[in-house]
Amino acid sequence: MNNIRNFCIIAHIDHGKSTLADRLLEYTKTITDKELQAQTLDSMDLERERGITIKSKAIQMQYLHKNEQYTLNLIDTPGHVDFAYEVSRSIAACEGALLIVDATQGIQAQTISNLYQAIGHDLTVIPILNKMDMPNAMPEEVEDQIIDLLGCKRSEIIRASGKTGQGVEDILAAIVETIPPPVGELDAPLQCLIFDSVFNSFRGIIAYFKVVNGQIKKGDLVKFYNTGKEYYADEVGVLRLGYVPRDVLKTGDVGYIISGIKTSKEVKVGDTITHVRRSCAKAIDGFEEVKPMVFAGVYPIDTEDYEDLRAAVEKLQLNDASLTFMPESSMALGFGFRCGFLGLLHMEIVQERLDREYNMDVITTVPNVPYIVYTTRGETIEVHNPSGLPEAGSIDYVEEPYISAQVITHADYIGNIMTLCLSKRGELKKQHYLTTDRVELVFDMPLAEIVFDFYDKLKSISKGYASFDYHTTGYRPSKLVKLDILLNGENVDALSALTHVDNAYGLGKRMCEKLKELIPRQQFDVAIQAAIGSKIISRETVKALRKDVTAKCYGGDISRKRKLLEKQKKGKKRMKQVGNVEVPQKAFLAVLKLD
Image (cartoon, rainbow, N blue to C red; front, side, top):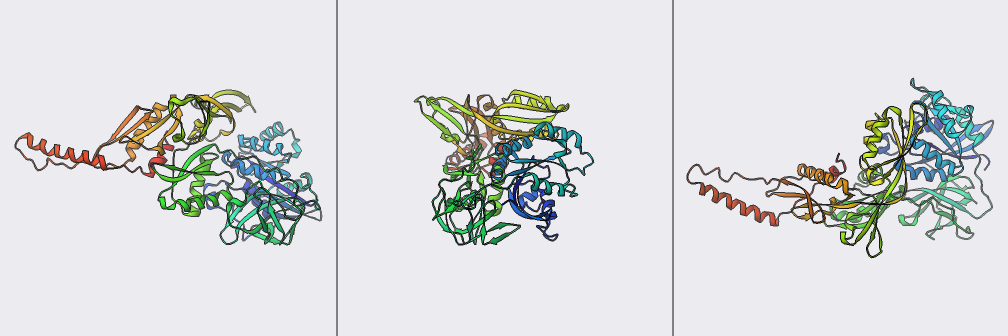
């Protein structure tokens, strides 16, 4: 055990975590030159296309230091705020963390957020200055920022480059010398913490775990503590680039177990594996329960695919523990699921993965945040869906979630960023200069205001310099109204939205205008209306396609033309009574991108 080191890599998005992980794998000869590709650990096509890490990845390396063999278990984590739950799970399975800071950009919001998580779990933090090969690197300046943040000595900061491999030897030496070995008792009853799982169509569910106490052998009869299910360990082993079977895994090891589990409900991330005969007294404290921040309805385009969608979402949830879902139905879209996501990027990734990995074409409704409604009868209802809102007369007041948003930016952009945050109903709480030209702003804001396009706008007004992180601070009373969209007097529940009373008129008008562009013309007039309760606040009309019925009248009395037009009018009216309007998928997506 003294020769095992478990560590993760944490950093802000795009600070070079995966590239540096490549160099560590290359230097320890864990992968051959033939297997090496850029960002080796980013195995999903989506990760390669977007250049971001979505899933944390675990891999084992062997390293010879001062003639002693060490086993290093590395977990590469994502940097985006929407995947913070992946980071928290990785941190729980480690004793140390490499904190990577980009020498060209300095400390950013997510760096601080991830660092606090690591310190909260008593991890040993090794600060690393990455991208030292870049001509615009500012090592002295960024080192001062790290010293301010961590209170470490300048000599402890390792200068490195993921591209050239500079400093990799120093990093490996620092891991062995400063990160403590895992603690635990080899003779105690078995306790393994599950930190991830994947579905394999041939072998069932594969769970990844860290052995906290005891040892697990191939063929042992084990049970999952929270679900109480018992299985034989058909195969246990360690995680290299593939799966490497072992006969036994001991305290401090990180590995996988295959036991022929077929149903996804039986494996929970954060659960404990123990022996059936000599089981542990209590489960290990898992991770904090994930709290979804954005809810949206996910529906199959073809209603017959409902069961396939359920199976796909369950399999995806195994691999992405931050996704939550429950069944719901909609008048416009039929049966589907109300899914909880950690943010809009997370929602986009889940939608994309359903399409690529499970061939599921889905429609996603307008996302919204959870609200708490207090009724006049003294009841408290949590509302995730606008259609779940009680009648206006029975509502006493509504509370919406608030966040504390931390923005770190160059001093030149303070004015623009303040204007943006104040227009989103934000209140400035703190302004703190980190250096002469870098400033940290802290705002209190409603979560609903940042869900849609806040991040994109922040990046564009700060020319990509500002970084953003947030955490929820609780609920506050708010004046909210339910905005309904009516097509020919019929309510389209999938387009309903809960919004602040100040934004309702503008949002209603923009939605009507957008839908007018997107709804195809019918043989009859289509009225698009936005309403609050019974009050119509905006209207647009999609004009009917009309045949020129008077073309054959070339003279004679006007009454001949009128007779033909009246006949056409009656036909259009009859058609309107029986016709229905299909809302195209583009309309649901366009509502998300309303400027």
